Length: 135
Image 1 (tube, helix red, strand yellow):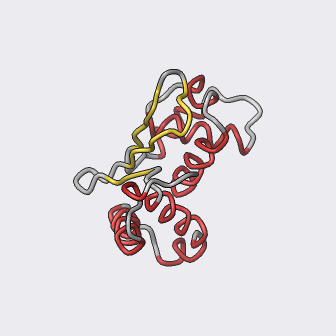
Image 2 (image 1 turned 60 degrees about the horizontal axis):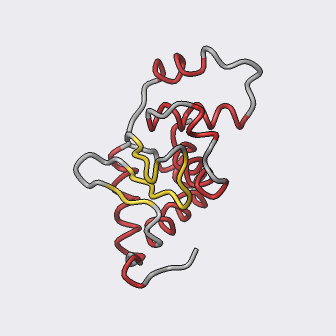
């Protein structure tokens, strides 16, 4: 991604934002160690201006590189219940890893699966990284 100097967030600030999000979600140390690579990717995504964190609501906002169904950005809620995920997965046949991730992205963003499936692979990769902290 071509970076505009005005859109680059200092690494230290990006790391603080990711840590505050993990703290808010009460992610255990052991899970943080297991997801070290994903945490580093979140930091880079913030540095590059692809995602930003609302410090009051702890919602991530993703600025899409390519619009999907007319959307240019999407918001991820910071928490999800097991019941919400179960309801989302109840109608999914032949569960695959891709369908699982898509279902989590749909639940976290409130988007329908048609919008998520229209996402460019780079945008979907970002969505997958965020969703990975919820399962």
